[in-house]
Length: 307
Image 1 (tube, rainbow, N blue to C red):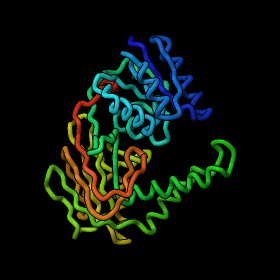
Image 2 (image 1 turned 60 degrees about the vertical axis):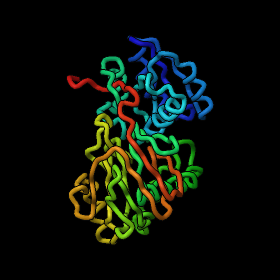
Image 3 (image 1 turned 180 degrees about the horizontal axis):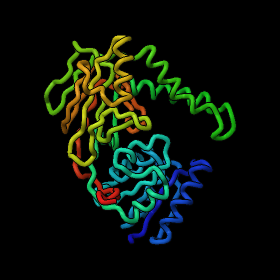
Image 4 (image 1 turned 90 degrees about the vertical axis):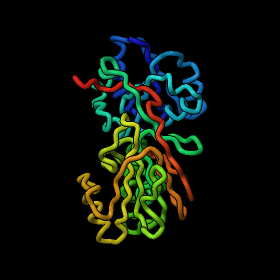
């Protein structure tokens, strides 16, 4: 078994540390394992610089996976890297979409017995990467508002026992009440699929299928097929938004007449200012962004079809 470099977040709580200990007990029976905790991009870069030929195991959620893959991409080390994942995040959407078990000991066994497969990556025009999903409009604004409320409420309580976890439900509720309605031009592989005369509630570009802990925003997306799935919702009226939310919860929203769902390799969004949420990272406001697929950009240890 190849030696493993396990990268974890130095701010991880006690529960994550206990879960990681269970995974390490499984791994150390069969492999040489080094654990490194990082707390900022500089520390992460230093750890990756010393990784050598070891397999890199991310112990964390979608944000941690994004950080490691982004750093490897920036270093031009991604193509030759083999990545594994121990899902310790809140949503773990990338793990869900690739059938990596959410049980931490089962996920560790996948690292030992799974198969290495090539994975696609989404990259924008300034070199920022998207591992799982990027969306603009209502969902991004909900995440942005939620992050602010999480910071405000996080100081009320002790440690993880605080009100910060209420931030995202509050952000979602505020956005549902008064969502941004955007006039955007969306092009997929050079073809206009939404124009300024069609106001949009949100646009999603999915390499993976779900966001937010299991909401299947782009339910047919597959990070191994060389394409991204694009979902455009034009459910801008109050009643339409409610119906859209219900269908989204059932992953049936692509069937709606006010939803466009298609696949492509390059997606451009332009128009009035919009915020983006990429793997949970919020940035903006933007006036234009273009994302393209880099097929087979890196390799990942995934469950084998037989197991």
